[in-house]
Every structure is written in C-alpha cells, then in structure tokens.
Length: 219
Image 1: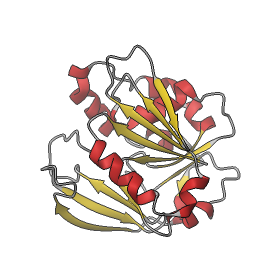
Image 2: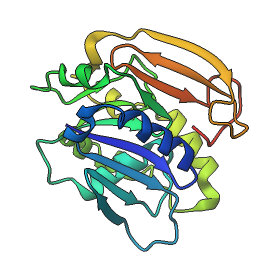
Image 3: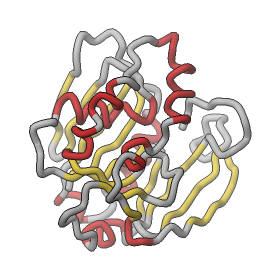
Image 4: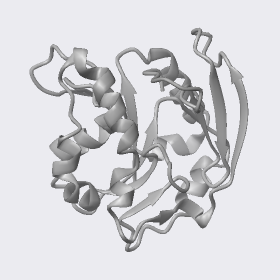
C-alpha cells in the first residue's frame, strides 16, 4: 500500500508537521508516499519529482479534497493492483499508526473509509475503484483559481463520493470511534481548528471546517 497525501501550495506548515510526525517511526522507510500539491495553476501539466521514498506531484489544478484522487486517475491508472491510504496534509499519526495499517487485510478490498460518512474522503482506495470513478472525479477538476469557492461547495456536497459509489465498501477496522478536542489555533496561523482522533488508525485530523458555518479553504 502506498500513502497519498492531498495537499495545497499554501499548506507548507501542515505538510511539514505531518511529515515530522510520520518520520518519527522506523516503519516510515518501508512505505512509498505520494504527496499531491494542488494550486500550481501556471504549470502546463503535472510536475513530478522524487526524493527518497516520497514522490512529490505539483498539480496544475486545485480540486480541493479530490486533487490527489484526480492525480491518481490521470497518472496511475495502469497500476491496477495498487491500494492507497488517502490522507490530508492536516493530519498527524501516532505510534501505533503503522502497526494498525499493517493489520489491514486488503484481499478483495476495493475501498475502506476512515469512519462512517462523512469521512472527508479519507480512507483506503484500490486503483480499480478510482478508475471506475474516473468520469465523476474528473468532473471535480478545477483549473480556475477564481472558481475555487464553487469547487469547494462541490467538494462538500460530493464528499465520500467514491465510497458511496462502492457497494462493497467498509470501515477501517470496523471501528468508527472518534474523540474531539479544541478548537485551538493548532498551527499558529490564525485559523481555529478542532482535532479529531481516530483510534482505528491512531490518526489525528486537524480540521478547520467543523460545523461553524461558511466555507473555509484551509482544511
């Protein structure tokens, strides 16, 4: 399984925080990572670089939570047997993360969400289920900087689209327990966030959109 991080050009602080948390553990080196960074509108196509076990993909679109999934559709469609854990850069892992990930049996699994809906598109995807949703995913692709709020609304209304389109989907570890703390200015950037903890992956999600109204682009 590869680990895919959905990110944005303005998310340097969150991205660095996530990488620091995951690089604390020796198992980090046994996985491959794909970090998809949206918002590079000026690029004619994807720009791909590799550093050790991390592939960095600069995307010439900002498709909110779907940016990384769209990159997998457009760049990895031939990797039929591949599975991915799809996360946001506004995440942090705990010491049991890799053990819990290794305990997941991927046999006959097309997708698994982090929790019951809404799961923020976070979870495990097979390349096959991503390919099956190609047209729907590409319809969420946004290459217009001025249309980002419109596409944020679309992303919210179609959250977990791939999971919902998969009749065999399940929940990681059959466990949807969530603990919530905050809000605090977690990253020191002026944006108030809550922290959701998911014990089934020993995973923390640092959220700026948590029911306070309006649309926040700093997820």
